[in-house]
Length: 246
Image 1: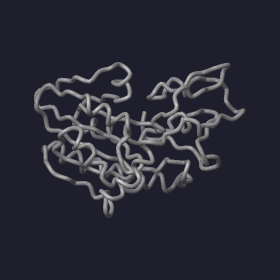
Image 2: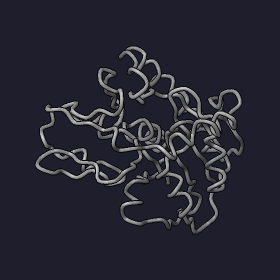
Image 3: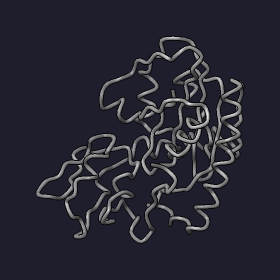
Image 4: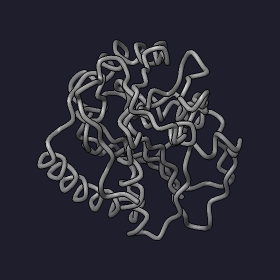
């Protein structure tokens, strides 16, 4: 079984790639949280994988909360794959503090935090995804062999220090007051449907954020068909959805 959390498709892209090669089942962490499902029984010989993005050099809050409550009813080889736009820092250590894993991997995909950065060119996106597919194949071989260890070459320098300094900005930030909606909004309701925190409601045909904080996964922003949602200084920085995921 492979648990994944995704906003723009990068983690699902990785999870689908691994699952296709080992015949594993995919489980959406956001759906588990909505349903209150935290207990799972691996089939005999089945591994337990976690594929998650890195936010501010740490794991998304929803993933941390899920791992704290997760119960795996039988012993299984467990691994985590961290996907990032640059480095993972100590996100893997955070996971190990929440759930015992046997192996840690890192993959660079496409950075999508548009409040700070413009999206990459189409050519660079394709190059990054091509490299990611090669990394997925290497990871899959180690998962097949149940190889233990840390195989994350994306941690970067001083990972513990970087996470300790930057991650609190995310953990105690995540303010929904930074979201804005333009006149392009058509009231389709997709943002309300896909928000993992169920923090968006349509009022008079427009999205309203009903909680002071959310995951700031930016799924609503990137996947809005009218490009009507912005967060902070994201205007003009582009949108991104992984083109290789269903």
